[in-house]
Image 1 (cartoon, rainbow, N blue to C red):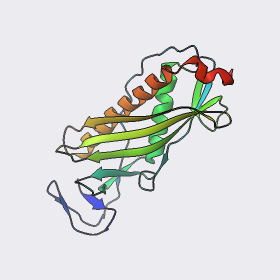
Image 2: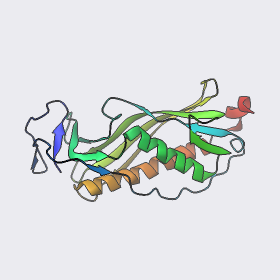
Image 3: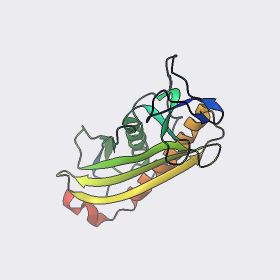
Length: 204
């Protein structure tokens, strides 16, 4: 898969035997594979609350639909000719909503535009493949914050998930992102499910 440096567009490079050339064909759009089923979790402190899930904040590159790759130390690139079907923060938001809905922790779960008692805010710090070795590893890091209706902080956590791709092919890299996403959303559900009743007393 060809990649293009964000620091010097059009500059030549060599990664895994593929040179960088100007993009001439329309990019292929990729979506994550279907999410793994999320096990139900019970926490009576959350059962009567409505949760809103905001799209994560992210830096300029991660706010786009480019598929980011770190080919070697201190170099940041993007895959040439490949894009996510929507921007990365929206992809993560959708996975979070689906996983938390399936868990049954809250009375209702939706995007943060809907009425909610508490809101899950987050910052997407990493959403890239990394060539620490070949094949690459998909890595996702999310800083999550649970806030009340006045945006007062109730709890926060930084979560990190990784998954090794089966090969350097972009389809296998996308599958690795899917595995990492499942691991990350499971961590979010576990974290929420472990919050104490005192965290939500002001919301009753």
